[in-house]
Image (cartoon, rainbow, N blue to C red; front, side, top):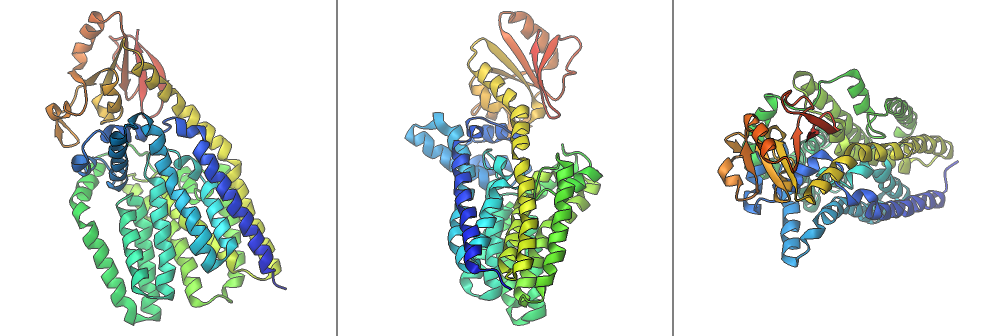
Length: 488
């Protein structure tokens, strides 16, 4: 007995409607009113540089430049329109745009080619799984990376089915855009291209010439950034903030497509349910055509291949944290939605759909705790900067080891850069004064600064609370990455 297509369409329509509700929530969420991630401070700081210099500045960080360039264009437009005071909210809306595009794609292309159920389930999963919801509300590149990787995977199927110029061109373009957005978006892209090569080699060697053209075109388009990438790899190899790999990390990576690695029990549950879902769905594989089978396998490899590559490198030099898996996790959820849409036998559909619902519920159950974690760990920092930026009687000493985090606020308060190097992000220190209002100070000079400004509130931003035994301070906010101290 087969499941009625109308029932599948109704379920898919419900999921699409819920996805629209989730988009509305993103637009009014309190998270859009605050900075909630430490890296957002860096984003805000570098956007003060002119767009012609921005790629050069970002080359001294550890990410590719596309998202920063996109935000800089928005910044310049806001400046021209006199709306610069609304920039934080607008920046956060920019991170929601990819989900709006995913909704449009789901309601059109995915629905038309794979049905309402696949379209609705995929769109909804992109809002509630893992920490997707959080990353649509922070000023970082993850939502854009997810979008470009998903578009690459969608047009992979078109390439396999149609082999037309448009499909190959879009596959290539979205692959390059993904690589220019985040390096861990490039890894699933590599996995996709390897799978496509194997598929063509096994089924149609004549079409390998198009694969070669696409691969070469992608490499050429990314070549302008290769020198910067090599420099960034060298920087990371000398030492990076990411902690060493543990078994807990690995379990968290495997289950991250459902929930954060902080929720270890839910991760283990999700891994088990997914394994049961795939093993049970193998019963349906015999009825699928070869292209669909390979497509499903490719999507699974894109996610777990990213984990294998990332953890393998991390054994030597830790480079991966769970949020880097967001782009490949999106692909895995497309695969899950694709499989469900292909199952017509009533019994198999009910069991498979029930397993997917368990994964959805596992992700939804962690939304509240995930939001609370981000708010608890970041709300105080935002309140701190609100306080000092409105306090004309404050002085901030910013440790240069924070790189350029918090330099955004140098133009809002009296800021000193502690023990600054001769250059930051490729600029001589004197050149940075054209962008930021700050003064230099050494650790030995701080006692005199305190003595001369006893009527002012003096704060120190450093790596930990053990700053200097000769300077009395009180920790206001302390995390594993940064400590905010107040001089007593």
